[in-house]
Image (tube, rainbow, N blue to C red; front, side):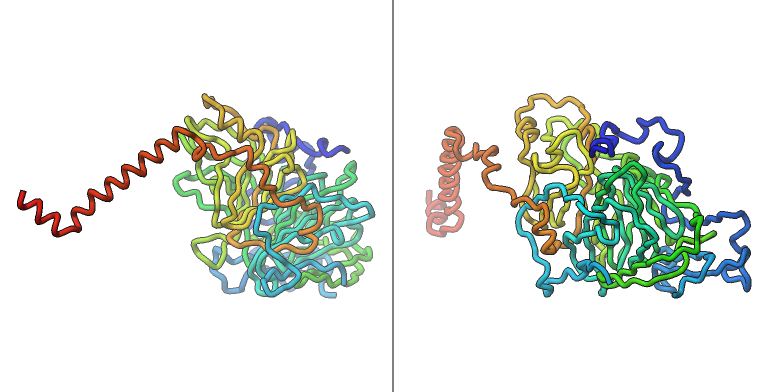
Length: 494
C-alpha cells in the first residue's frame, strides 16, 4: 500500500464520518469508554470474584495476579493497580535502548539550533517491534524514575510468539504509517494513523501488522516516573479538548492457543533480558482496575481558540499532560494541531515567532502536501526540534502570503493535515542515531532572507528615528533643569 492509503488525510473531524460507533470502520474490536476509570472486563460472565480479589480458588481455576503502577500507599487519585486472572502462572539480551539522558553521559548531546529530520527510514530486512525501535533523544534517567525519552518505531513484521514488557516507564505510541494491533494482557487495541495509544509500565504487549499492510512507522514517547493525565480545563468548563468519553480501553481477550513456546523481552534500564515460557502471556480471562492501556483518536479533539483577535497560547491544544516534580511546570505536554476554523480579525494568523521556555518536538502524521510546518522539509514521518529559548518560527510560503493579506476572512486551516507536538520543560539530549539518522541540516540562515529588515532600511523610518533622537536630546536637556540648583535659583530671580 502507498503511504497515502494509510491515512484519512481529508478528515477534518471524527464527526465528518457520521459514525454511530466510537471507532473507525477499520477497527473490529470492542472497547470500554472513559479516562481514569476503574474498569472491569471478563470473557465469561461471572468470572470476576465478587467482594474480594483473592478467593481461595478462583472460578475456572484461574490464578490471581496484582499489577501495581504506583506505591501501595499512594493517595487514591494517584493509586494505580489492576487485578488480573490468568490461565497460567506468570513466574518463570537484546538491542539496547538509551535510557540515561544526563549531561554526564558522553553518548548523548544537545542541539542548540533549529533541527529537522527527513522521514525516518523503514527497515529493508525483517524487523519486528523488538528490534525496530531506535532512540532519538530524551532527558532524565529511567533508573532515577524521572524523565522522558523519544523513540521511533519502524517495522515490517509482526511479533510472532514474542512479547515485551517495559519496566522503565509508560509508552505512548503515535501511529504515523500503517495499521497495527497492540495486544496487551487486558485485551487488544487497533491503531492507525491519527490515533495514539498508551501502555502503562509493566503491562505485557506485542505489536502486529494488520493484514494488507507491509510496514508501520510511528513515534514512541516514554515517561519515567510520571504518567499521562487530562489537563485541567479551567474557564473552558466541563468539556472540550480531549473529552474523557473518547478514550477507549480494551476488553478481555485470550489467545486461542495458550500452550505455545514464547519469548518475553523485559526492558529494564534500557536493556532487554529475555526468558522462555511454554505458554502465552496473553491468557487473562478477566481483570479489573485502573492501571490500563488505552487509545484515543486525535480527530475527536475539540479545539478552542480566539474568536476575536490575536492568538491563544498553544496550551489550548493539549491532549494529555505529564507532571514533573515542579508543581508549576509539566514534564511534558502532548499537543494536537489539526483542521480547525481560524476567525481572528486583524491578526497575523500563522504561529508567531517565539522563544519558549519549553523545548518542542513536532512531527507531521499526515498532510496533503509537504511543508505542513515551518518549511517544505517538514514531511510526514519526520520531525523538527527546538530547545527552550532557541528563536524559531516559520519561513514557508504561507507566512509570506499572510503578511500580504489585506482581509482576514474566516477559513479552515491545516485542512487535510494532522501534526502533534511533544513539548517539555526539559531540553532534550540526542543519541548518535538521533543526530545522524535522517537528520537534515539545521535551518540555514539564508531562509530568513525572505524576511528582510524593512524597518531600519526604510528612508521614512530613518527620518523619524532622527526626529525621535533630537526630541530625546531636547527632553534630556530640559530635564537637567530639575537637577541644577543654580538654574533653579536663577528662575526664582526672574
